[in-house]
Length: 152
Image 1 (cartoon, rainbow, N blue to C red):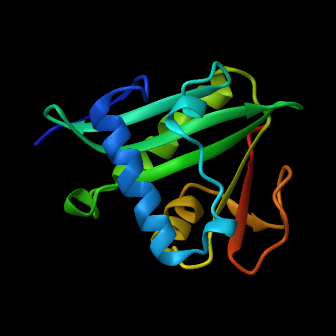
Image 2 (cartoon, rainbow, N blue to C red; image 1 turned 30 degrees about the vertical axis):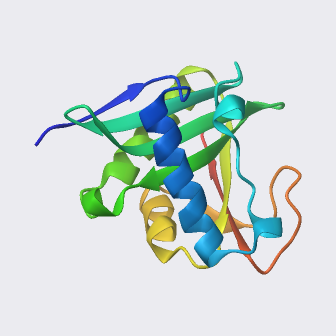
Image 3 (tube, helix red, strand yellow; image 1 turned 90 degrees about the vertical axis):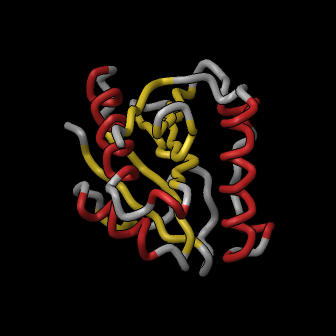
């Protein structure tokens, strides 16, 4: 079973389905007013690059790099289907996002995740991210955990 990770458009039916699963999972753990989802249409904007992990042709994971001003990149839409968890797919997607950000000269990566996502925290902390206060224009919230990593 070889997992391939590539830049793809999110405007594919199977990727839309994957993002729907991600949204449903997040809404089980976090009130909707504290979920900061990007739609697949927003993910397809020029300021965002989407990585899709596939097992054969099946979309099983995703993650995105959204670019902001001041050479800041944001990790968004990280998800691995339950059937494929434990294989470090999320970690591999984060590695690809970081490599792209470095290649483009971004100086810092940031992200917001939920307060009930310890598996995500592990992925980010193993990748060298540190917890921090609110990033970008996210409000301080008991439902959010923020991370950052300097690329300089």
